[in-house]
Image (cartoon, rainbow, N blue to C red; front, top):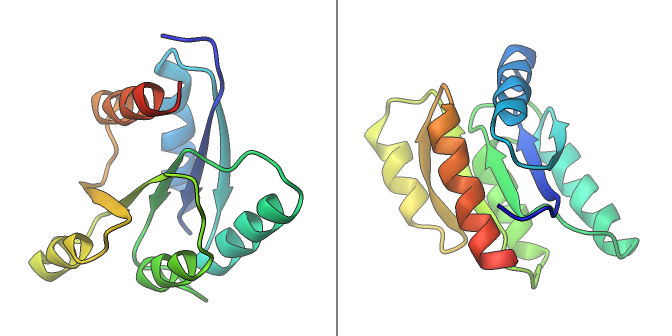
Amino acid sequence: MLDKTINLLVIDDDDINIFIIKKIVEKTGYKISMTAKSNGQLAIDYIKETLENNQILPQLILIDINMPVMNGWEFVEAYTGLNVTEDINLYILSSSVYENDIEKTKSYNNVKGFISKPLSLDRLTELLKEVEIKQF
């Protein structure tokens, strides 16, 4: 494992889920800078600001589907319109059990997959390994 920081963006309106993910992040052994946004619009604004200020974008984004203001699908559409050139790993992280949500994930080229909540330490570690291999 390299000593570089991985930037993680979590988009979820549930404070308990954010808390759980923070605790899991602490147990991975990776150096992670985690940012959490409570809806897709705040996340889009964050990414735009990051781009405008030439800051480092997140290498991994976990997106809940059901949120106020801008849901996960609307975020993915808006994110696609930003024309981000970096290859960022986007994953839908949802408690949805609907097959159409899992299938819809496959219709977006920039979304790598669907993860059912709750996020596990093993699954997050797998995602971080993917980022590490690709980025560093």
